[in-house]
Image (cartoon, rainbow, N blue to C red; front, side, top):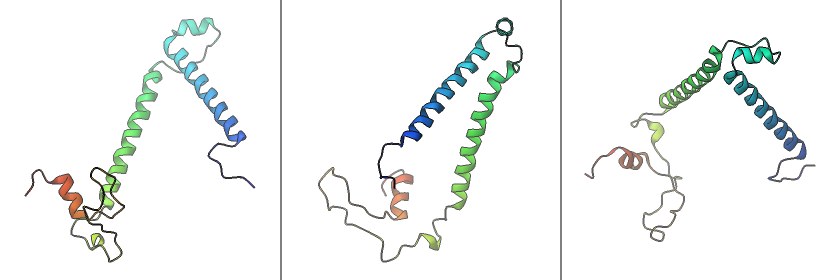
Length: 129
């Protein structure tokens, strides 16, 4: 039986260290391929390498793909959010609503459910009405 512990198991630590060393080695090979001219690589006996175009293209493609993923995630979240006049925003009698002045000045407030109208007032109103 495995004891609950925040420290990783020895096997996981070894796998993590090997993954760290492998990624460092791969980055070193990538930098070698990127900065050493093709003639220098041929003198070392390394004759087959992809074109130098891919040195810039692969990181750019990865970053663009990551940005598209974030935009799609943002769009899906915006589409799945209920409108303000939806019945899904109605709270019930079990919602935790606390009085505003129940703690020390500047202290951390108690746990509570913040109503949507108060959130909108804080974020979207430009002046006090």
